[in-house]
View (cartoon, rainbow, N blue to C red):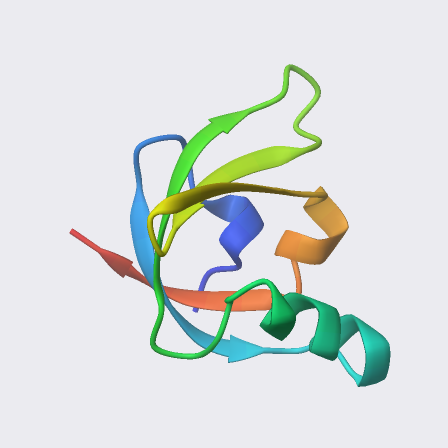
Length: 76
């Protein structure tokens, strides 16, 4: 299963699992990133950090290390 950070701009996925613990997990979930949520990569910064996503009707930027904690199923 790919990590959210591995998707390319324009690709979409559905969150299947979040690997973080404690405060990191809570922070990610508080932003609306929960299992079953559809998410789309809008763009990546030139050096790949941060990454902008569209989720639940708004745009959200995550650092690459945060996006690596989220496993997704790619939607084609």
